[in-house]
Image 1 (cartoon, rainbow, N blue to C red):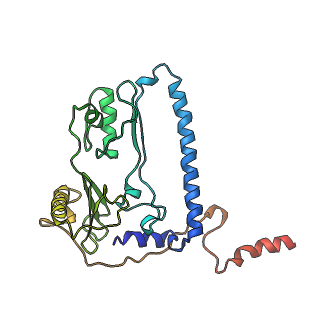
Image 2 (tube, helix red, strand yellow):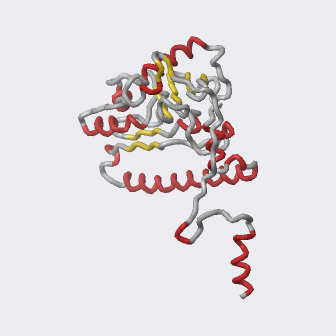
Image 3 (cartoon, rainbow, N blue to C red):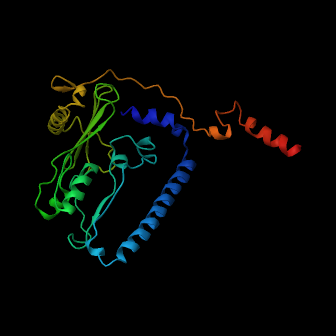
Length: 266
């Protein structure tokens, strides 16, 4: 339903990935995660060697996930959890309990409030006071909004997340998706038709969330703007090393080998 997925797959050559390559790519991804984990362990070892380790606030997060083939998609740029849901860990031994997992809605705009709260003068700006939520002094976020693409174009889409429900509106065709992330964590059952009351509520919240400068072009009156559905034309991304004279793909793979073969015969 999201034209962004086939569009991106075409750009990065992912529409030609087969099962064998999928396994290799996932193995490499897990290897990268293992390497990052090792590096973080070295940093934490250095922190824990300090006398003030228990009064050190650490926040671990990421900017996005990777589809890794889920939903026939690769890379990012969708509102499926595999792309949009990221690690968000907060450790402060002197102030926070260990091994507590919560389902509060948080995002990267909350990092500023975490830092300022820890410094003694909380400013939330566009986020919520996560540390205040944890100690009961601040209210949790009721709904989380995600925006993608330029408002007022068919590339725009918005996500509204509240409780276990996730609603996605795609301006390209005015398409809608609704998932219950508790009952359907893989997000494969679109419940737009069966849960219209939830759709209507989250749609209205989405309209309200776009009612400010910078996003208002996504609206037509009191509704989210839609465009006739279209398939987006995509070209390929070519990553060349121009410093070595690589400026394009050869007409035939053997063209790359011929100079090497000639040098070998010389």
